[in-house]
Image (cartoon, rainbow, N blue to C red; front, side):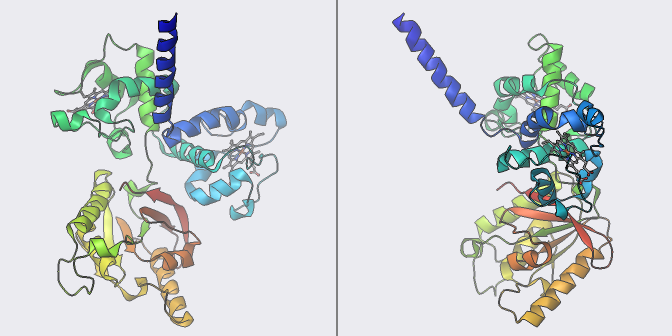
Length: 374
Ligand code: HEC
Ligand code: HEC
């Protein structure tokens, strides 16, 4: 009996540890749970808006998959919470509940991540991702990583590169059948076959779970958008010579940081058009090393210490450059916190970037804020 209790204690401790590890669920996965329980009744399974409750109430719950594409994350959060619905382009009827007191900030962001998934994924969820989650942790994370980014412990040991499941550019081109077949039959030398280990519905659950691992970087893969970034704050450790006179001025740490930024865009198949940066040394060097090219322009330099009139002029030039952009790749602008603040009311923390859609002249809309891995 004592033994049994000991075993139970150990087991429940293990359970606590494992649930703790899983506390950070993939955002779209967590968002789907909330969507299913709170939104689906009106907005329907696919987000198209003709759910049973909406029909019964005789209201038209909007087609979210369409709306989400033209609203920024921030606006969506305001609409969903009800804290600032005027931020949307049209009035929103009171039949759409205000979720402010129901969800935490974290949960609202997760819901938004799922809405983005709904609006951009090319594939339906055929299996139950709730079945997929524990199986993924059990059988796949050792190679594919707990977060699905392809960095599990085995990758170093075996020197293998499993596919990064968080990268839509990698996984979107495989349809559900192809993903399922790779899991059942294996792939290459190191992706094991799970036929006989997993049932068909378990495999389908894994496929859906993999779909929800996507971290969607807006429509950046299609090009034509504007990426606004700021240089890292820690210039002392990233630059070799703070006076910035020498060429090739990034420290090893700075170089690594810049290369990683460039790689993240490249590995997601994000086409880069022109790259413009502030005249600030770190901004320029980081942009050049990350993207292999940079043109430094005056109006991207920090407006922090400028007289008001000149600051306004920089802001106007920035708005015009964004609004009138019409290139094929995405335009990258590396500028400073206050400059970004002045055109978007967004506070962009380091390691994040803002994506804008040019609409002609000095007009543009915000697509969203995305995070870079460090
Ligand atoms: C009781 C039914 C109902 C529920 C439940 C509901 N909605 Fe809505 N929602 C509506 C209706 C009706 C509209 C359309 C309002 C309008 O166009 O005026 C709407 C509109 C929206 C819009 C779009 C606003 C726009 O720009 O047109 C978003 C985003 C949205 N809902 C998100 C959600 C989310 C997320 C949930 C779950 C957390 C949810 N809704 C739950 C009824 C509902
Ligand atoms: C021993 C390491 C290992 C384990 C365990 C593992 N994988 Fe993989 N996986 C790989 C490698 C390596 C690749 C890349 C294979 C290639 O393309 O050569 C891969 C590729 C894949 C692909 C892409 C296949 C394609 O068609 O391009 C999928 C999907 C996948 N794995 C899913 C899973 C799932 C789900 C599990 C758990 C049930 C899992 N893997 C377990 C190593 C692993």
